Amino acid sequence: MKIKFIKLFLQKIFLIAIIAVCSSCGVSSKDIIYFQDEPLTSINTVSFNPETVFKPNDLLSIYVSGPDPETVRPFNLPIITSTRSSVNVQGETRMQTYIVDLDGNIEFPFLGTIKAGGLTRAQLTTYLKERISELVNDPIINVRLTNFTVTILGEVNAPGTYTVEDEKISLLEALGMAGDLTIHGKRENVFLIREENGVKRFTKFDLTSINVLNQPNFYLEQNDVIYVEPNPAKIRSASYNQNYIVIISAVGTLATIAAILTR
Image 1 (cartoon, helix red, strand yellow):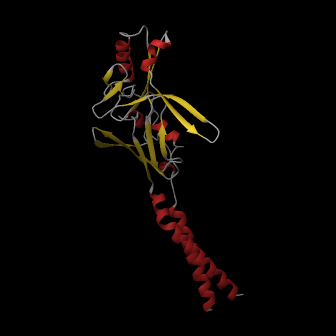
Image 2: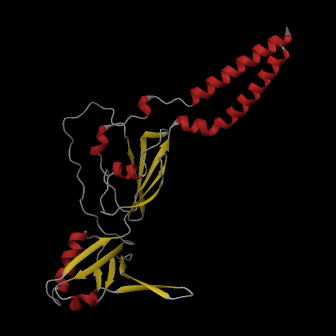
Image 3: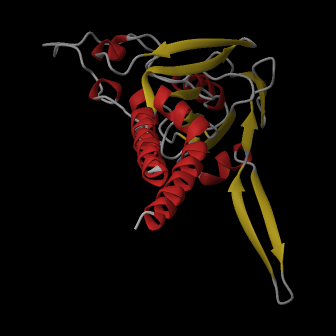
């Protein structure tokens, strides 16, 4: 009689443990669906600067070309890197890059100190063309920001730091590069961390609302950080799943022993 009671007791504990594990991992559709509002017939255009504004520590690639390659050659300083082996020496030529210093300046060949901070690519291109046109005919200026990166952390499938080639990216595009949110990502708690003039500023996005498309800072800037908070189910599973596994295993073993003894 006692053995049957023990067997019944262990079976109940086993069932309770399974229910507890399942309930701790439960996620409703409201936790994972984007844009749950009523569909909008139109979306207001988000006001944003379509061009990146250069800041200190930005790394700029500037290439000058023209009808006569020899006349523009002095404005394109090459960097030659070499690798040695036991057989030969191989060299690789790449173009010089210019870092924007803390005062917003770069040092450019022949022109000297140039104010680049606070300018867009179009503005800097226009300025360089005006200055270089005083020395050569019909110069063509190509300016690019080579270190436009955004960092995506937290509950995404591929967290990391990503380089943005075209210098323009939205929040949704950035999350897409990181493989989208995992099922455990808290859609209503996506944070943007941005540094402006040495001060960290935070913006919270709610991806369950279509109004996120109209939110300021929807378009990202260089060096922005996106953090996706884990939902309660993920936190609970991280805290308790290991213990649940041990408990279920132990209870299952005891239930098996009790079943053998009552045969």
